[in-house]
Every structure is written in C-alpha cells, then in structure tokens.
Image (cartoon, rainbow, N blue to C red; front, side):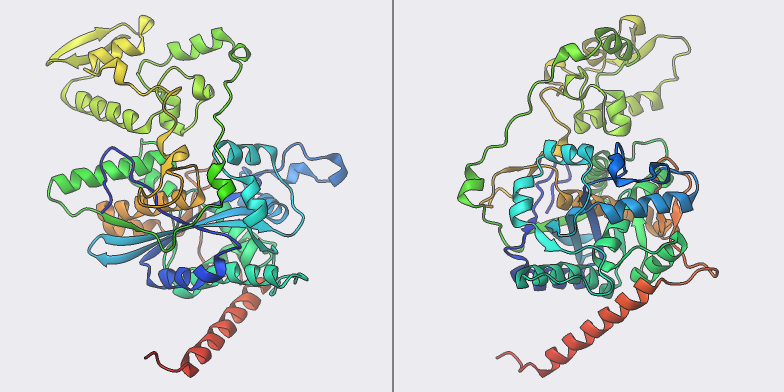
Length: 495
C-alpha cells in the first residue's frame, strides 16, 4: 500500500515506446476497461505561439490562448494544437480492489509526431530541464500522424503504421470504456488528445464541446477547478495538491476514518539500454548571480516574512528559481502552514504591523522590518539547520520521482507525464472520499487559464451539433469493436 505520509511515495510506471507498444497494448487496454476512472497528463511542444518567424505569415493576434471570449480562446488553442505536437502521454488507471482501494497502473507513452510541426523554445527547454530525454524521444518515440481524418496518413514503413494505429487505439479504448476521465488544468490536454488521435479539431468550440460529451459520457473532471471550488484559499497547482492529499489521507487513517489505499503496480519492467544506463544526468549549471539585481532580491525578500517562499507556495514557481533563499520544498511548506493554521485557530490575529508566533505557549514577537527566516523558524520551534532550502532541495514532486526500489531502472527519474497523471488521479480519489457526491456537481467544468471562475462547460448545446470528425471516428471505433468481437467469438477456448 502507498505510504501517505510526509515522504513522497515512489512512482512506478511503465515506459511505452515504439519497441514495446505491441507487447503492451493488450495489457493497457485491459487496465483501461477495468478501471474505475482514468487520469491523463500530456507534454507537448507549445502552449502558445510566440516570436514566430515572419516567413510563416501567422497573424499572432489570433493566437491568444488567454482570450476572454471562449470562441477566440478556442480558435487560438486549436491553432496551437494543430501546428505543434504531443511528445508524451501519461495514463493512470485506477482499478478498484475494495472500498476506496485501488491498484494503479501507470503508463508513460513516449510519442513522436511524423507531421512537420512547430516547437516552442520555452516548452522544449522546460522539458529538457526537467529530465525529458529528447534523444530517447527521437530514437524510441511511438511514431504517429496527427489529425487522422478518419484514417491517418500511411507511411511507407509498416512499423510506423502499426505504431500509429496502436497508440490511436489507446484513445479508442478509453472512449469505449465510458469511464470518468480526470485531468488537471486539462483544456490543452483534451485539445491535443483530440487533434493527435481522434481527428482534426472542429472549427467551432461548440462542436468541440459537443464531441467531448459523446467521447466521455461519464464526464471529465478537472482537479484544478474542483480544488479551487471545494478548497478555496489554498494553492491549486498539481504538486501541492498531491502532497496535501497524501497528508489528508494519512490523518483520516490515523483518526480511524475511511481513507484512500493505493497499490502501485508495474506491468512490465522497462529495461534500459547499456548506453542509457551509463548516461548520467548532468547537474544544472550554476546560474550567473550577477544577472540578478541584488536590490530586487532584497526588495522581494523584505516582503516575505515566512521561512518558505510564499510565491512558490502559492503558485508552484519562483522568479529566483534555485537562487531563492527560502525553501521550495512542498512538504516543508505544508509543515509550516499546518503550524500557522494551528496558531491562527488558537490566538487572535495581531492588530499591528509586527508578526507574532507562539513558543512554549507564549507569544513571541518577530519584527517584520528585520524578519529573517532563522528568527521565524526559531519562534516556530523549527531547527533552521533542518530547513530544506531551494538550493539543496528541488520541488519534490515536479522534478524528483523515485521509482520502485525493486526495478532494474535507474533509481531516480524526472518529471514525467505518467507521474503527473498518477498525482492527478490520486488527488481525485482523495477528493471523492472527502466530498462525495459534491464532485458530480463539478464534472465537465474545465479550468481556463486566467479565467479560473469561468470554466469551459462540457455540455451538449441545443444550438450545436457533433462535428464531421466525430461522426467519422465514432463510426470507425464501432467498426473496429465489431471486428474484434468477431475475432474473439471465433477463437477456440483456452485449455
């Protein structure tokens, strides 16, 4: 069972590449069909179009993915998804084994789109900095053609055609299973998933939404939107919610209440090649500190009176990155926030400019003008020497995912779509235990960046209809399903 304590549980997942997708496909389909719900996350080569070459002739004014009007936003998002590419798809299936108990199967599908596409420098830098192996993607990524209509382009290579057909059938299996789909801030994930494996995105967002209602009739749940509605005032980025959910379930278990029990299961160990095993991940180069204005650092730090980085705690990122002198460790942040919550629940707030904390039952004064992390830590009874600072402790969930100790893999992996999918599913399962049917009232509401209070509603409108893509692809799915049923019925029974 997963340890839901302060330490992050190991992430166990199966790498799916062009070399093993044929061997793994039946197992992936089986786990999808048996799942109570499915969580996904994806990595792609762009969230927006920026600094495009004039040679392309793009009207960048139409590529505003944060537009207020949903129609304008969809048009921009569709343009990005059609011109960029998926490079990784994380799939996490939560198969029930009892009340609030699951076996979880995590798959990390490494992808390589065969259509010529755009790559945003910022997106590819983020992936590389977080351990995404671009060389491995080029050599082992599952090859596919984006925007099939209804069948994809065919390559002269039979292997490429088989790979593309199988990865597309993974989405088909999800549609046939009719299980709830869980995402986190997942609007772009849905758009890329549709464009890559279902068909060309519709011209209107009304048709896109109509299609999604048919593809996922059990509903789509966005944990970022749900968290902001059910847990207002707390941070809603993925890593924070995951660690908070772990703690919540631990407390419930200790109090004798029903709690989440998760067993991570691995279908097949991915064996690294000799070259890959010997390859060492290069440490990040130290940034040139002279590029930061010391006055700016001092100005920002004077506004923070806590031992952890308040901006990172709220948003999951910090302008100073590893040069920030306050902790970015999420578990430490949660420790401090729990202490702060206990203090605020037992003592009235100070009315003047100074900060008060408790020590041995007494209030102790910390002057904000001279506030320093070590002073606040001592007032909170925390040993400053044990505080994880950002230079020594990277964000726990986003960059350092430990694998199963019994695997033959390298013991340390980095930011993967599979691990993010697992965290998304874990958060959803935790929220379902705590809030029950309240989650059903929030399904089919997808978080919109910059418009958190105005989600995209996935519901069929009386004034819209399904797209041509939807009709063609759903017909294809039915034909494939019927063919498979015929094959199964004609196979001799197993001895």
